[in-house]
Image 1: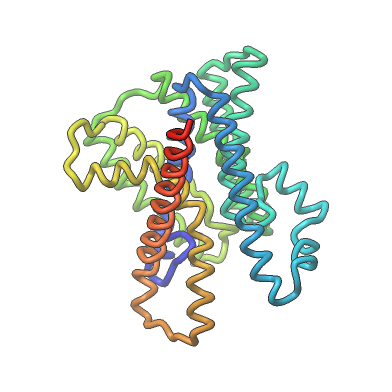
Image 2: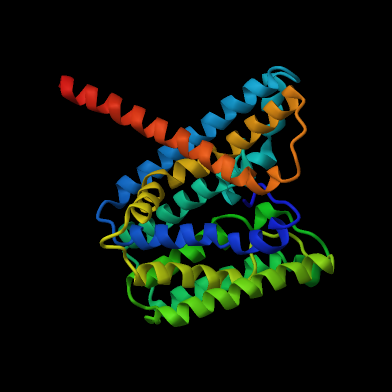
Length: 318
């Protein structure tokens, strides 16, 4: 939805949807700190990051081969500035949405180095200080840059491990160590509602006054994301009905692959519409997000079914 907005989604739904990525980082941190196989998790995300970037490189190389050529495409994406931004600020050379994977990888590596290699235990006060400091800097350099500095700052310098990934990942740690007080469901639902409205108002005030730098993060997003995760933790589904069981299964097994392939699905659909000369009706913009999600889910299911089938055949031969 964040990549497929329209006149309704952009001002009223997308601002709330911005809580999705912070939620992902909080949940990742929550499970990472409980994992007994941290190195295995790091290796898995490293492999997924490499393969995802390779997949998009091949996709765009094929697309550009019909125009400027693969060589010129490589020249466009590979330079000192892009390489620096890729390694320091997680900006993918091939598709911007893949920043999440390298940022998550950095979070895991940083925490593994601090806790397992250097044997440093960061206490709760220092952890909270780091979280508040990084999120505050991210907000100042992000949506509020025009207000503070009077000019825009590239989203690359705020949408990365330092100002989104690491602080939310650390919040996951605080939840695991019970440093965040347990709140009632009623209070959490109230907080979610209040900050959903707050984020929408915050976004639209900034946009309407032409003072917004980018829409990646807002003040209310942190409260919204934390409340959503806490509500989910407070209410584990032990005996779900078929619908909730299906949602939980898809979320656990396919969410990452859906995130990875979504942009490719969007690109392919746009290319098809262009090649076929189709004029999509206005109402399509309201369902396009569900079309993209459905296709991405089908691709993810097909990939994992094929992968598991091949693995099972290989193991049976052994």
